[in-house]
Every structure is written in structure tokens, then in C-alpha cells.
Length: 320
Image 1 (cartoon, rainbow, N blue to C red):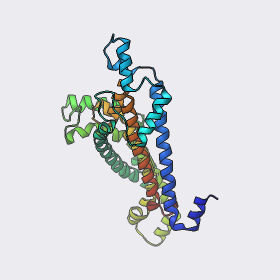
Image 2 (cartoon, rainbow, N blue to C red):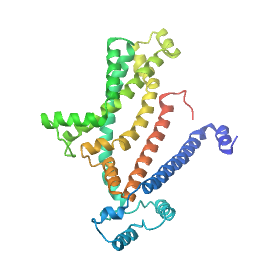
Image 3 (tube, helix red, strand yellow):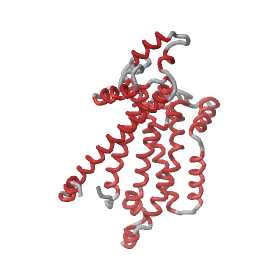
Image 4 (cartoon, rainbow, N blue to C red):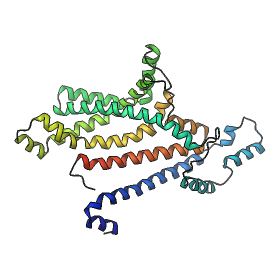
């Protein structure tokens, strides 16, 4: 047994501190690994940022000066060492386009992605929880079958296709909501609906299955034997335990909302991190690509870390 494990075993009150330290170290390794893979991946893909920045027909001598200014004239290992040193100081570098600090650019776009992600998760979680609980109360009933049918259709529908269809009908045909941009509460409706529908199938299935399994547990039968009403059992006892799979998926899908919503932000021209990352990829802006990946990796790992801490609060059987 390691010294860390022995310490936690000897003092149970320190188990949570040891767990947090262990997970924090894991988070650092994951973030560093993701950033390292991204660094080498974007540089191994064919394409010269200097040629993209300069007009066609630019002499090679001018391109050479541009590469020196960007730092791409050095070997990839030298670029990586310089990148790690800057990252250790909290410096994400300078964007190739406009010369702005990457940290400033990403932090300006991050609140917009957060706003879209939080709105989508709230809508998806609220509807999925209500629908999943309703379906679990009468398995194989008409509402349960309708719920499973909706989950299958929604899960099979590509998000980019759904976003385009919603835009064509509600923004262009009916002119109810803005088609692109972030211009007030109305502009949230279409991108939020697109993301929420993409998130709901797994959430509904997780809630439904979790509640069906929990309703068969011994503590539920014991509560019924003591004369406790089904409404009280579901609202107080079953909800805490049955919601654990939902919390797990919320943590995992938070990463999808942040990093996987690139297409959605692109369709609706949403000024978020996903759209920023797509533009950086098209322009071969290495520092900006790395900056968006760092932020997404940090947020994703932190969210999943908080989800792990929530387990013990929801289910007393979960130990650190």
C-alpha cells in the first residue's frame, strides 16, 4: 500500500483531501496531454501559416521574414519547448491574425459559449428529467414507448441538419427568431433548441433506466412497507439515487457543449469558443487553436471533477 493510501486509510477524515489531490494531479496530466497532442497535430497537417497571411505571389524572402515573426521558422521541438515555457507562465501566446493576446481573445468568447451551453443544458436537463421520470413510472406504457421513439429519432438526427432546418423554417419562413448572431434573448432560441434536442436522448434514457432500477431497490420496498406514499418515496429517496446517472452524463455532455458545438456555433454564427476554434483552424492560427483547446480541456476536466464530488452527496453508498 502506498504512503498516500496508508495516510487516507489511517485517517478517514483525510480521504476527501487525498482524493481531491489525486484528481487534481490527474487533471493536470490530462490537460497537458491534450495540449501536447494538439500542438503536434496542427503542425503536422500540411499548410504554411505565412502563405495564408500573405497575398498570392509573395516572394520567398518576404515569407521567410513572416515565418521568423510568427516563430514557425524554428524546428517543431524548439517550438514545443518555447510553447511549454510560455504555458507554464500562463501565456497562451499571440494570435497570428491581428496580433492580439490569445488569452484575451478566448476569454472574450468564453462567456458567449457558457451562456449558450448553460441555457441548452438547463432546457435539456429539465425536460429530460421530467420525461424520463414519467416514462419510468409505467414501463412499456404508451408514454414510455412514445419517449423511447422520440429518443431514437432525436439521437439519429444530425445536429447540423436540424440547425439548418430550424433556421430555414423559424428564422426565414416564419421570421420568428434571428437566424445568426447573438442579439438578445430571442437569438438563443434556435441554437439552444438544436443543442438541447441533441443532448436529450441520452439524458432521457439515463433518467428512465436509473429510476426503473432504483424503484426495485430494497430501501424503496422498505419505505413502502412503512406506509410512505409513492410521491414522497420518489421525490425524496428515489430522486437522489436515480439522478446519479444523469449527473454523470451532464458532466460528459458539458464537454460536448463546449467543444463539440463547433458546428452549431458556425451555423448560427455564434461568437463563442467553438466558432473561434473553427476560424483558427481555417487560418492555421496555431496559438489560437492551442488556446481554445486549453480552455476547453480545463473546463471539461473541472466539470467532471465537480461531478465526481457530487456523487457522494447524491448517493451515500459512494465513497471516496
